[in-house]
Picture 1: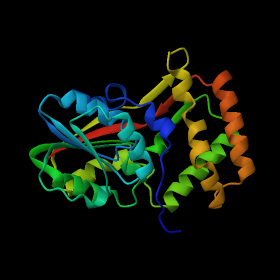
Picture 2 (picture 1 turned 60 degrees about the vertical axis):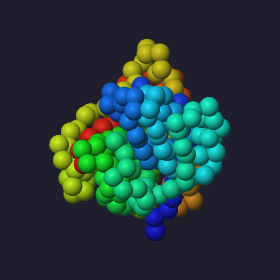
Picture 3 (picture 1 turned 90 degrees about the horizontal axis):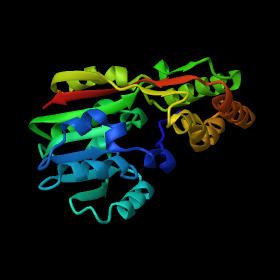
Picture 4 (picture 1 turned 90 degrees about the vertical axis):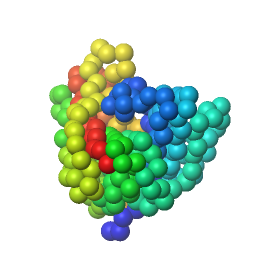
Amino acid sequence: MSAQSHRSDPRILGRRTLEQDHRILAGLLRPGLSVLDVGCGVGAITVGIAKAVAPGGCVLGIDRDESLLAIAREASADIPNLTLVCGDATELDRNQQFDIVTAARTLQWIALPERAVRSMARATKPGGLVVVLDYSHAQNTWEPEPPREFQTFYQAFHAWRAANQWDNEMADHLPVLFQDAGLIDVEIHVQDEIACRGEADFDSRAALWVDVIDNVGERIAAAGFCSSALMQEARTSYAAWVRSDLQRQALALSAVVGRA
């Protein structure tokens, strides 16, 4: 199967914030910096970046999906130091232009992440930083184990991703990609997304996989990795299990920082 493009779910993207969902980057920002946000989506995190580098700083958000950019432009119309353009992470036409180049949960959907990291490194000023946040889906865990139907779907999710050349252990492979791109002083910061029953945001975080099934389930079924009936059974059983039995969900997430 040839690699395909992925369209992210605006509902998932829109719930994210800089402070909660890209914490390492948030701690590096200050007024006056120039930042490139690769795979900016609907701009939920990008707007936070623009506010953090004001006054004096500027932000460029790039995404390959014009429909997501339209949402981002509408939401950020009153942010003067933010520009949003359509572009490809693997072919950035910028050279030593930004103090920080970042991507959050983006490289997991790119078939050639090494090209994206090299492209991001080229766009960074000497001494500037590349900051990438991403998942390793193969390391995700739930307590207790999810329903059998969801486990079968999750295996199909992994197989579908692999067939499209999307790395199911992206976060684990980032340090080597950084080093291969010539970045130095590489640091790894574990940022696992953990949802525990009783926490205020448990319902929304735990229900993430319902949204994922709604977003990509039919594509996975159409590609032959599971049936539509199984996909629906996985959604129904998982949603009920979240309400009744799930105690802890841990999504493996790491932020990797390197210096140009």
